[in-house]
Image (tube, rainbow, N blue to C red; front, side, top):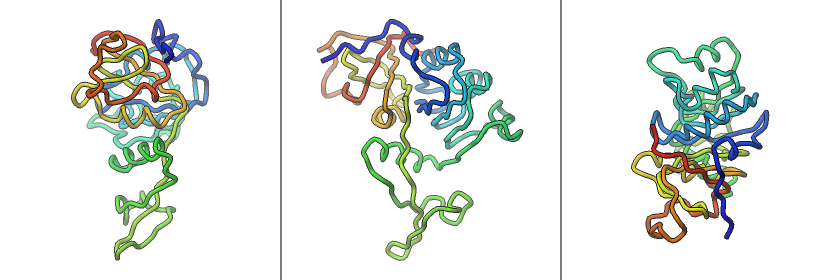
Length: 223
């Protein structure tokens, strides 16, 4: 087995370049890979395509990259907030692109990307603008639309505990999309609150096996 530990978040994202497609874990403020995103913001890479449940808020998460104008396109399920966000302002000004995806479809597209599924049919979105231009099929008398998997060059995720082999344990709802995203990227980078020695994690509690994780960095407790 290979030790996958990196000395810092900056080192862990050091080869992410302009134009990369990146999955970002997190749901609202929960389970955001803050340190990895901050390191990516400092690098100043541009024209990124982000795949994330939301487009950041409150100066945290993807919001940092949006404010820096590092994002070209977002694939997201919840891009707007009660108050207008930097992403919404840029979108309405035609400065960024948005692919809006229903949340269940979003999760399943990521899972399909990790599982090698070429596509799937769902009733979600039928009869709405989200179904426009998509292949449709009637199954058992119900209309479905065809959705395709999501994959990325990199996935940035946050976990509670991990070991040098990349095995991960999440805590509560901070788990959200992390396990699926870890399987659906060419390179998965995990920040963990606690890094323990190999053998200290209960194998029955490991949610993401290390085979799916390429890099791991200890960042301390989440803010």
